[in-house]
Length: 186
Image (cartoon, rainbow, N blue to C red):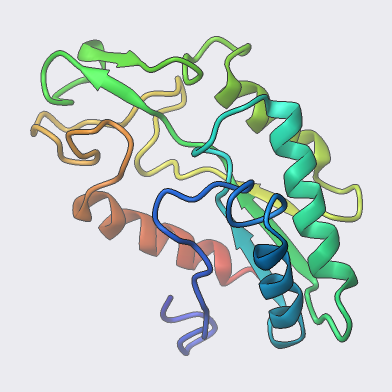
């Protein structure tokens, strides 16, 4: 992160490749212990758990609540803001993500208001303001309002061939988008 209030904002990444909130968070004594031990050194927690290890939206929210409670109640915790990124699209494509028409949502990621993705994102929004979660964040630069990856006519521009992970092009627009958001933090 750069140019936050005119200077770089220090941060750490607690993620491990392909980990879920269950394997590196609420379901892991080690994951909770690490977060508890780091809570005195950070004021903001930005999380994007929810995509890996799909179970149910309610079970995922329960694990997230455990993580948020651990952070806020840790001895000496300085955490004063918790924000969660919404689950992003996960699709297959018949045309290398050249357009949205060729995208086929994977199970649990259908844009139908009942899928895991839509239900979990709605639960996150409903949790904001309850004392644990302060805000949610959607990467509008790479996700359309109808739940698909944005496209620009170039194959695999924003999403890799797995339909799950953003590309370098995506991160190039996600970074500034996130920095604008982080600049509002106090």
